[in-house]
Image 1 (tube, rainbow, N blue to C red):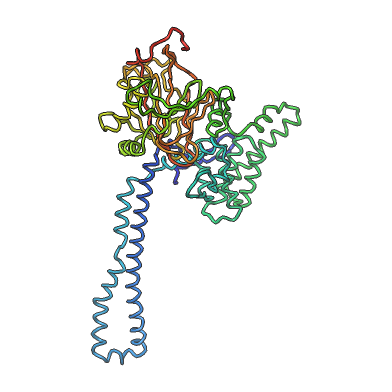
Image 2 (cartoon, rainbow, N blue to C red; image 1 turned 180 degrees about the vertical axis):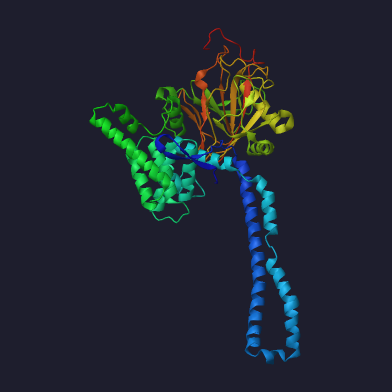
Length: 536
């Protein structure tokens, strides 16, 4: 990817590369499938162009061979050759007419069809922001699932059907993108991987000098002065005249000399030592660590005593007439908060209908802004979503009725069915579905009160990753096509249940489709009466 780049100078002459940052990546698998078809169409068009060029060259080649023989004969005995009146006539004809025709053939542009197709398809191409977002998604997966650069580079991921690998040039691009975000930890990881693959003999257009340039600065930014000097020396061995590296080496030597001088004078160097040994990766909050562990399946294990309280059952929606004779399968996923899963609750045909309705209108997923109460995009939610109303399709209407029958809650005040597609690295970081006390206007525009409960359909299986996790309690709920999970966000008193804070883990391999229904307080007064205790 081409970056707008410049070089700037900081204190004492240290030179560093600077690139302009981009935004995040929000393309769904559905849209990327279209891109694959677009690329296939371009390949077909390119092959047609190659055939046209080959046909043209074949015609020119035949001309050249014919004229080569003819001119060989003619030049051996020009007078004798031209003594034949037909030869004289044909020479005039060739030079006056046929060579002009050959010239036209040579000048004929066979690329018109290919270029025209490229121009049409280019409007659907991803841009720099999309490529940057895809790279950031890889870095996100690397962190969440504790993947080392070599594993990612070789494509050794669980559940993959089509193995792929990263070239040294790809690794270099990932390092540059991390650099634009001032993420020197990942810059170092990916520049080192690029260098490793080049050192192992990989043939690539990536230049070791450029890699070492970025790598040495990233290492310096993390406090490892000795390693930064070593890398800069290696760069200068490859390019002794490298102006920036020579300047940086002088700066590093100056800093090193100051440190030695401070040590000799007995100056306290404890702060510097701490800086040099500090952990390179930024220290996430405890919730972040729990979230990532749960995404990897390393969460808290429920005690046997608590597990014994979890059951599976046939559920008739509290004697709902539609389910008395045909109850649904229900199982407990967690006890506090109570999370239940309904099995075989949405058919493959219904799933496909919902997806087809949603695909044309998929757009960047939004969240409620607690200050304005309006929907807005957020960096912590990376997916594409669409909203479907019951009046649009009998399938959506039937799904809404099913949710009402099985929860006992009125769906007339609920939000529309939201369909979301999580593609590469798609996630939704820890959040509450309900509005907190410090967000009084969270759902003011809806006029239906707070979100009392959440119903979540899983409309696809996921090869790896993509769990719904609850960091506060250590619960992990894994996607299973055709099932749905349900939980209450509010206690019967109307107070928020903070243990329902949850997240959608990044999709590591595969494609995740979900749809959810947020049910609101209004209309539930007699369906779920209030209690006197705040926590009941």
